[in-house]
Each structure stands twice: as structure tokens, then as C-alpha cells.
Image (cartoon, rainbow, N blue to C red; front, side):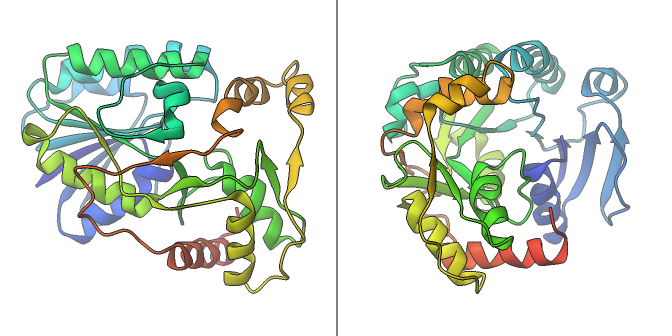
Length: 303
């Protein structure tokens, strides 16, 4: 099989690894170069410039992993036009997207497949627009919804728990948390998400347009910090330092990222549980194994 992967960030990297390991041919479109990898063709450039020179003939599926800075404005300006172009280019070729829970607003507290899209923030409104565009494109798309991400390929910028918890514990510092640090939260392990996306592209014509990725059992931010410290053989944390929302709000006057995080506080003040539906039979990595892989990657290549 032959697949196009657009974007080579924390999800795209794992997709390329799993696809090539099973013998698929992969073409990657990314803005900067990458090391040579067997079975992978790399096209360097912005997807808007690359697609007009590339034919969709011969591809069995497309994985759209492109992203933009953590800003509703950037998402509107960058993602909406590029996704529209990609969907027009793909035609009848199935396109699979990783998706967040933002479009479901407060419904993400107990999110089941088929729940109505009801955004409650500027970021959520953009995600809702992207979902509507995919539905209306006339092609076959599947959006695979994930919770907060952890994994060996996760970046500090793209995975909040790696930044606030894992990196700090590895450095002997107390982890940070947002909102109510004791309520349960679903976590998605990136390799599990990728297996869900691969299943989705293979069964795109039999699946609804939105499915949920396999997720680990919900844990609180306090429980996650303790588990990571134990797996990493670090001293048990004395607790998670809660970042006050007032600090987030003030910092948001100067930082777009903190402003958007403050707008998303409803996701942190209450439980967040992602219920897997159609993809529930796919294997789910245990929390300890997932955390161990994160530790090993961190030790090999510090972020």
C-alpha cells in the first residue's frame, strides 16, 4: 500500500515508523528536510505549493498531520485553506485526520461517539469548522479524536503533560498542573492513536466521519505525576503545583498560548473522559509501558 503523510511532527513521525515497519510505501510532505528512511519519499515544502505538482493517483490513503501554532487565528489562517486544498486534491482517496476534543466544548467532560459538536472557545470554533468542511467535501474522511497526548515522539510544545510533568520530573523539579489536578482525565498514547488512524484509513468507507482513538484509563494529573516518577526511578513527587487561572489570564495578555489555554479552562476544571466506540477492539498500551517508552526516548534524546 502507498500513503501520503502531510506533516512530520509528533504524530506524523510515528505514522511513518509504523507504516514502513509493516512494509507500506510512504511519501512525506514536510517543510524541512529529514534523514533518509527506507521506503520513504520526502517532498520538502509547504503543502500548498507541493500538491499542485503531485498526483493523487496511486495513493491508497492520506494522513493529514499538518498543524499550526496554538492560536485560533493561526488555525483559521493556516489550517482551513490548506485542508480545503488537500481535500480537493485527494478526490476519492480516503483522508484521515487526528482530531482533538475542542469542537465538543463542555461535552468533552464525558465524550461519546456521535455526541453533538458544541464548541465553547475560539479554538473549538475552528475545530468545528474543520469538521464541517470535511463532512461537506464530497470525499471520504475520517477524523480520529484523541485526548491529551503522550508518547515517545511527543514534543514539549505539542504535549502539555510532557512540558508540565515529565520534563520537570526528569529534572528533579515539582510538576505543574492546570485546573483541578485531582479529577480523572483521559490520555491517548500516540502509537495507539496511530494504530487507530491506520485502521480508519483501511476501513474509511465503512466508518462514520468521526471515531474515537483508543485511550488509556483516565487518571488525575497527580496520579500521572506519581506514576511517571515511579517508572522513571525518580523521587516520588510531593504533589502537583497548580497554576492559578489568574496567572494564566495575566500571562495571556502577552502570550497567545496562555490566552488560548485560559479560554480552554473548562477542559481542566472538570473531568475529561473520552469513551472509545467503534475502535474499542484495538489494543491499548498500559500506562506503565507508555510512560516507560517516554522515559527511554527522553534519556536517548532529551527534548
